[in-house]
Amino acid sequence: MTSTVKRMALGAAATLVALVVGAGALVRAQDQNTNPGPHPFMGRGMGPGWPGGRGGPGGPMGMLPMLGRAIELTDAQKDQIKTIADSHKEEWKALADRGRAAHAALTSAVTGDVVDDALIRQKSAEVAAVEADTAVARAHAHAQLLQILTAEQRAKLKTMQAEMKTRRGKF
Image (cartoon, rainbow, N blue to C red; front, side):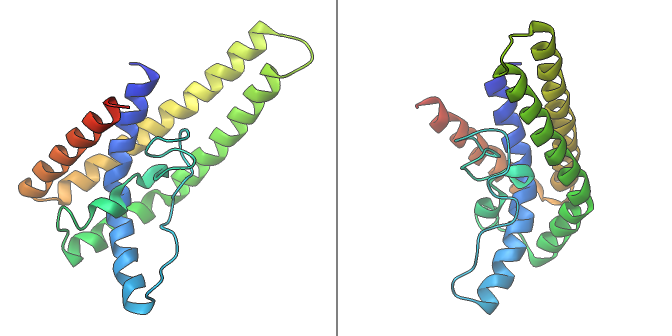
């Protein structure tokens, strides 16, 4: 799979998780405050401009905060999604920490005074391993989220994901 396809798949998986947590947080924030703060897990992901990317919606939760209303989650579903997100919180934090460290080490190897091909390849492999672990974690969370959605909600979500994919292809 290409890097772009991987990022899009990770973004779609993260979207479901973010939807649930974000929707629950948004509902609670709207009840308390007319000017809620940013959603949790926003902007700590794969790369700029991608769901889950730095500077864009994402992290492990992807675009779910924006999709919650569109697929008409019930309050019970929002609570279940929050529980799922909470159950993965420590795992995602550990993966994010590993990812930052791996990327920093790779950057240091690439920008070092001496070009060491073997070191750069090793650090690149470490980054890839973290990204693979992150993809697996997102897939597990995504599978858990799909289980709580109705068939109609899953169909809406698939349609929305296809539309997003089409829009991305135009740029």
